[in-house]
Image (cartoon, rainbow, N blue to C red; front, top):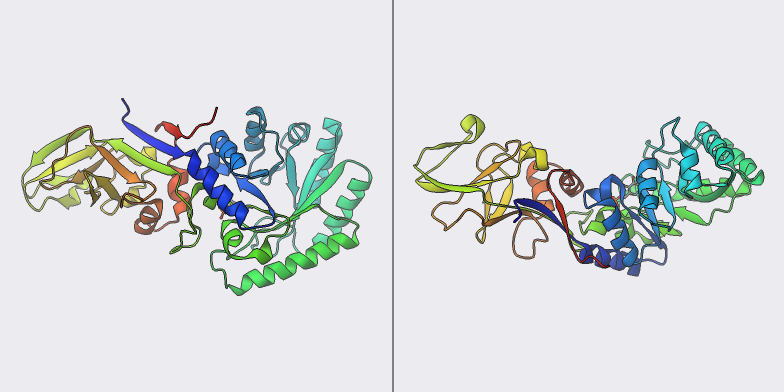
Length: 372
Ligand SMILES: *Cc1c(COP(=O)(O)O)cnc(C)c1O
């Protein structure tokens, strides 16, 4: 018997990646950083590969090495590398690594020497996000140094890449500017003698709406998990995560009863309260106090009062609600229940954050659609 669970529909992930794949001539790098946006690194990665992804993208070296330990042999790119990491472990594991500065390139050259094999690298240009990536001013020196290191055999420049600012607004003028800056950066790399096999720029939103950003490889993340990067359009994606729990306790209380810490909610009339064993330690944002939607006994309800560390309370009126009934915080939405988008809207965040939060250790993740 289960108490609370995060259910992951792996067939949804497979279908979503197939949908993304069908919309582009580029290869698909499924982004599985942050434990697969809370869906589980290895199960999400395997399902994405089943769906037609040929690359995987992660942030950290540790995430990349975990994929290799899990037996995954497809190309993996890791792009968030602070100084001093054991990058040679990545080189030995044939993980592709990103470099955006001469210092990072130097570390990769050293890692290659230590590993005794060529490091596969992707050079990152900042085309406007002002986050990762070399500036346009730094770029010529970086590509020259990379071309030299490639000639010496210590690195292979597999990719040149960048990241978009405003892909969730497909008509935003910064997209054209970034595409143009990316072409310029590729031309500079070409003058240095670099002909990278993979040029990549697009995240989920650009993969779905801007073919001119696809180049050789697209890097969708949130869409892999069935969440839309652009509010108001599902793009035919299916949410893969459901968060739910079984009602722990029900009780009748009189009108005017204060509910949960601080009594920020009072019952209007005699009513049934249902206590659900999920709280902020499990990923429920505390900002969902008094606003978070939950489906129970065929109706969508709103959390009564404060979200606690481990519990929430629902006011169910005279509806027949019993201990053991299933309360769904969010899921596919196909039954009319709330979605991660609904939660994001009431909490003032994005669907990305909702699902990633629930990838916590306390709530067990259960998988549907495992292939053996
Ligand atoms: C997270 C991330 C992605 C995926 O973004 P989505 O909006 O989830 O598709 C792609 N590229 C980089 C560099 C990222 O950090």
